[in-house]
Image (cartoon, rainbow, N blue to C red; front, side):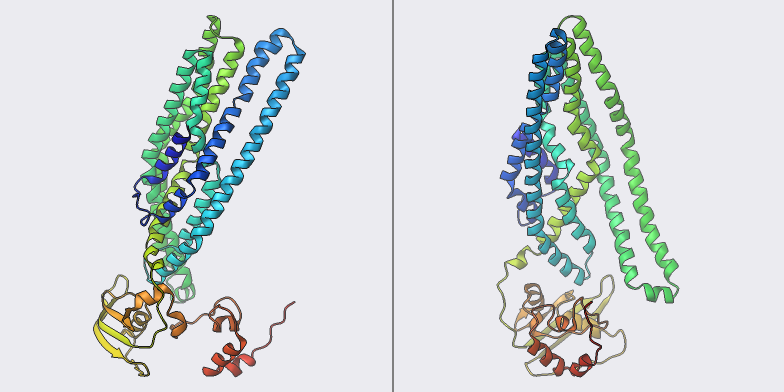
Length: 474
């Protein structure tokens, strides 16, 4: 059962994902918690075994206590079932704490890497929704502590209830097995039908959200120029696509869902009818008839829970795939050796730079600068001055050619984080980061008052800063 539970979880998160740890770093991190997941599976096995306590209690209540009118047996059964409930609750508490610790460790290990990866990808003007990937971390962590993963762990233990049904009568075991199999087939059919549609719907929702977020950053300009209707039309077109895909996914699952609802209503009644027939024939007792209905309910409960939370399961799986793809891009960066402080030898070789989705702005540009040399670049608006600056500091990667600092590609300097303290860069639009002026001058690092003052004096803003009104804390 442990193997079956682990296999179910493995298949859920391994489809369309290669077994290469470099290509799937987040999946590899989850694999490192294999022992913890196995322990959770064993705890689940104990919980599922204890969950038959109400069934055994009701069976003996009808067949022994009521038939024999024995108060002593009633008290003994009540104490025993209360003890079982105590162990049951305690094990669920332990399992929940275990899953919470696993989820926190996963978040702790990948959140910073996801932030760095999405940060670099956004700066490079690549297709990334920073809010979405950060939400993916939260979604994955929530899945590891939610009811969906517990239902996945509990599903393989339906065999326990089938075996108990066999102890009552083989026909009951066969009925429970067939009913459980039908639920599994319905769940599988739902996943095959809805998974592609849900993936497309989620992608469309992300595209609409990304467009809205980008538009809000230029909201004042758009409103002043009367561009709001055009922006709204573009956003609403993407939003309508999301709605259409979501409706298609829901309608596609409607037929299977209707059949599932029919089974959830019909199977318990059919099981009671089968139990009553066996009781009439003298094969089982009346208590066994009632107990068998509980066995059927317990065997089908995890599967119904999985079907009910299937969108959340698919969402967690897609989050894992996105996180794997995103973090894998930066795996090679972590293995780079740190570079020494640059001396300032700059070489631009056959540089070609294209803005995202546009024609080349800089075409076959080449020059070199030695330490101490100064180069001024002038030209009309939209001639490529800003694009050149962005390429020189590594914000835009060249389409072809190279920008080298001390012989190393500028991209290697930027990704290794060794360049920031050695250059100055001022974009066209300047915003201060959250914090004090001293925090911003220190680049949000440790503030050395003497160095901050020296830097402010060097650029001639020290007196201006001193003239600012003082902020008093309430």
